[in-house]
Image (cartoon, rainbow, N blue to C red; front, side, top):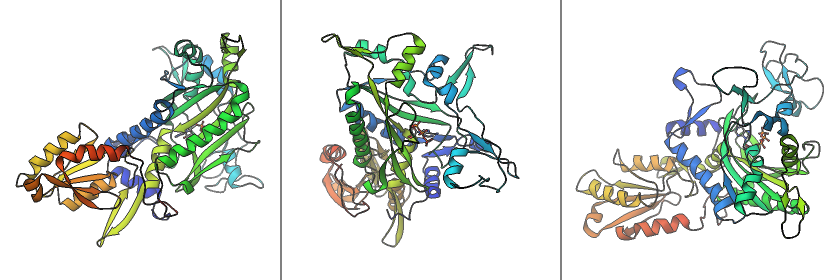
Length: 457
Ligand code: ATP
């Protein structure tokens, strides 16, 4: 993809056209910054999450999984500091537009002098605090003490289960707990499509380590998480690790880095990796009265583990994979739009298409499709010209296409088309399944890197 080809508008249009993502409640005019995932969007985001689970859980032996509830005891949010501090100072325009803005974001854009409204140039109010947590009530009656919150991060569910996990899992630090789930933040300025929404999914790890090992694990996790995006096809020159300055760090953090991606609106955070010390476990120990520490039965050593937290957004990742794989090219005088997605991320792996809709071809193609779909997500399509059907598959990123033609009826071979190179080779039907499974699990090489270099996954 040439850098100037992709815009957010093109991604939004493709998402709607091909059924990845829709505006929520669209027939009622839509609800601001909320989105619904359609068929291919569900499959793509699910694949992003699956690849995350594969890398952080399946391919390691020092991690366990968790799925904590969205609603938690309100004290959790006192202990975590969210009730007191999960707010951003806002300023409101006193001029024409009356809009509200985050003061810190305005300051970035207007580093000097008195802040002015970026929309209409009006004067602004002094900053005020707003709580970013969504509140609701537990039980049908709204009464004192019934207030609960939709969690603004999945992390706290992990901390409050530290003791449970330690008891059953027979793990000792260094080990981690991984979780994927919905989080909610009443963001002031949701924007940029699914980049910043009020309801979103996080993929979070809390990795518990002996205190002296924290800096080493922090470095490792920064590298591992960066490599994960590269292995799944994002061009390395579209990723950067940005270490927070001391003025940006929370008081308990001794290091935080953002993995940033070059989105169409510029470099923006994809994932944060933080060295959080023993802050979280100590806070929950203080507020709950429970001891949250590790006791080494062999040596008698006891300590509160330090925590490294790699925290990623599933939607931001999904958006980055779409943006980075988006491409347009001209083939034989016709424009083709395609997503050069890593095969493991692609919503559909193989499309089976009869060249023509007669002569037994659709029946044979359907049989092949029914065999293949037992192995991997597959599609069977008979509607429209073969060119149109391929364009549709290119736009949803399907890496392989199988065409059944007149020769198939004679010698039981089909053509196998590669999305990226457009090469077509003949292959026996009996070998298709093994061939495609092999390709799906092989290291993947993308032909479209910024530097023109291919890269092994
Ligand atoms: P930002 O500075 O962009 O608001 P953050 O630093 O507050 O993000 P974290 O609290 O570190 O974000 O959350 C970890 C990850 O969760 C982020 O890197 C991002 O991928 C995702 N995330 C956070 N807020 C949102 C949101 N409003 N919409 C979508 N994803 C989000």
